[in-house]
Length: 590
Image (cartoon, rainbow, N blue to C red; front, side):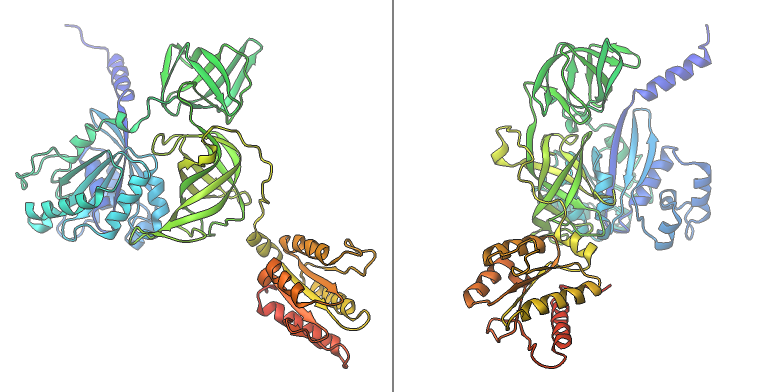
């Protein structure tokens, strides 16, 4: 009998390994529910631990324990010092049937953004529940977020069964409790199993202590998960990464198929332009294909010389996605600085960068009760429903229908930091007809809060009226000088100043000019001969709390009355006005 060539054996092994399906799963749960121990046990029992890691886990094992499985996972110094996992750690292992990537997410509520990051690409979520404590608020919270992120498979692993004597009644009670809660969640498959990560019961091998449990152990169940459930193979979505033109005879669109299947001869549409063509070639590094599917990276050639570039999306004509500028999304906020509804952000959606505003926060999620709470912003680690208005139309599906093109990343346009992540719920119903909107009528991308932080002041109107002769103008320009010397940006609007921008302007025109200045964050000083009660009411309606009335002749509606006819009146009056502006928060100090 001839022996196989060792090189052929190696190549055959590598080919089999390359063709194994990859499953991504995330471990969730409260602190001390045993996530790190479970992962350590999986890695140890599948022989995916390096010798130095194993030696360290044995050397630092507590008491009579042979090995501390949690140390296999918690390898960072900061983690050991605090006794918790503080970031998302990715671990890898393989079996004869499948390859795995584990995302180990932290359990503390203040690391919700880390948990969402780790779960965003997972096919399966494993929630660990301590059999001694049952279903906790953090268990419900993580299950809700995992459901919101569109993870189709949920494993509810009731851990530390050894601590309750492997009692079936405890397991049944926890299962019933979680089942009642999870009826409102969107998982396609929920599976329960009892285990002891510490002792290895039902992790890789069946437990000898729970003969009442008839299901397979965790690893076997993970190997049997049907990944097709979590993948959209019906809707072809192909974001263009780049256009390849090596010569005049070749023009291809390169990218990765996000979802669906494409074949030579398919009729496709390029969005947002709406141009149609037919797929003539599907090219790869190894040659041409007749068909390709997600998540393959290919180059498509079309029969027509259509105009397309990075950020465009090629789709099947018969299954078009949404095309809209305005949409609703669930947003996980990831930045120390709160969401600013008046600011312009950058949206990274598929291969496209688009400027957008997050102008309305409909509600945020109470992380303890999971109730919807009214709010106008999102703080670090908070989750809420947000209305997004892009400056250009986006091509998308809802996140529930297609995770690949239903999500986006939010980037701060000034710092270039990633500040949030969004999962698209639905487009604006007005735009459901696919109408492409232009960018006309867009608001400023600079928010009032950004102006305050930059200028160290809030836009205000100091309306000075009354007095004899040019007394009001004299006080106005004195105040301008004083505020300017204090480092503030200030401007006087005086109708009597023939060289001013609003020379000979009437009251209404003066108010319009003042409104523009206030919007720009300026300290604005307006001068008029008188300020009647009706004018005062109109000013309050226009400027609200930003209006400060200064009267030289005792008007009843004035915020402050000054007397310019006494000695040193200018200095006293100016200081009084400055102090009033400071007390109302218009002038900020460093």
